[in-house]
Length: 236
Image (cartoon, rainbow, N blue to C red; front, side, top):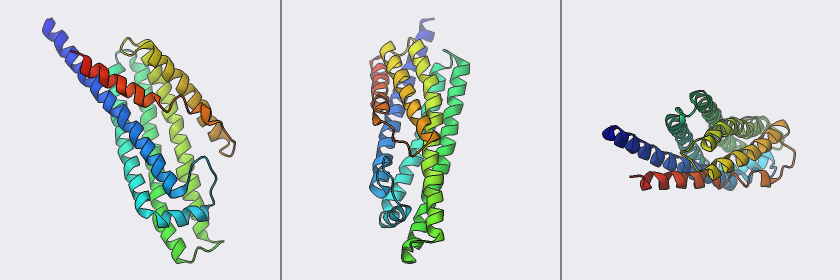
């Protein structure tokens, strides 16, 4: 009996540590990707001419490739995080855990398509610059499709599935005794505000949306990740 309890506690400790590492890894890689993309194409909160984007991609091809690698690593971390969350919380509510896991797997699938769009911009930008950056050409039409049609729209769409899965995971945080109620409440409120932001942007990308809707969620992943690490290392 005591031996079984020790095995359960040891397993739970390992799960908490891995969850903490996964949450923090996703947070760091997401921020790094956003910074790299901002350096290459400019802030996502500003509109940019596709001609300028193609020139910037050509000038910063190495940074673009690095951004792609970072986002691929992020995709692996999201899958790992989803697996660990399912493993840890499936006994709380197996159906909700399975649905949330599915949403995040769809998120990663969309993210993969988004990355393909980014990768396609690299050779296109090189050909565009070699052609003398013509003001009216098929380069601009294809570039607009790859950047705004696949990457930008894909980025919004993958966040839709992320938010849907997040609401289910954080609801279970709130209901579970494994996570402090305050963190569960923070997660639920912040992901709901995040969801409002994403659905507004999905409906009309040109609408100006307050960044305040995103602000409460930004530090949540690092906070919950740090708590899981603390809980894991503290457990005896």
